[in-house]
Length: 233
Image (cartoon, rainbow, N blue to C red):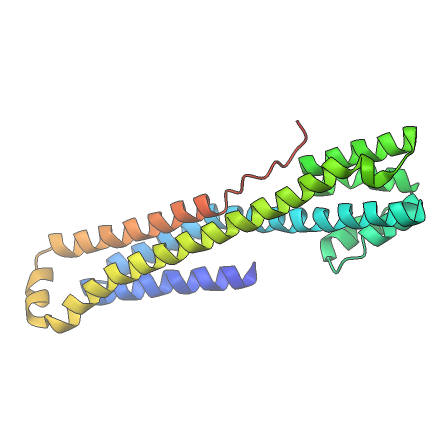
């Protein structure tokens, strides 16, 4: 999150700087900077934290479930399957599993439902219970589960690809809009100076940057809204 924090602070300062160049006023840029920072730290940052957490949990659950099922089919040992499933370079998962070492393996597996908090993991727990009760070939029992894991992972990848495409379009749109404003500021200098001598014009320019800031907030809320089921129905 630190890189995201630095990036959005930089964007806020950049927009405020361009606002100052465009309005020749200190009041509007300061107001814009405060609004941008408030928007990020009060609204967007929470969305980003939830977004990155969900992506991490989806990827981790995909690896855990697949590794667990495959290992169980080969070794027929819940302990070996569990150990292979948690063999990931994931700090949060390592912290969760570190405190579970003294529990029976089935309790450890069930405890992780609170960490993953995904409907796919509840489906996995049902498969494990069925395997314990009835035995059989775990690959056959977990066939639908593995398909759903793959589908969830693919859905996430497709959603991210579409999101990044829209992000590119969004950036191009606002860069072009701000470039037109800067072009007028520096290429039509005398006309521009006479224009901003009217108090209404700097106010309208400020409104333009406020709309830019709000559109960034709305885009982030939409971009980070992943349609992945986070709890069992």
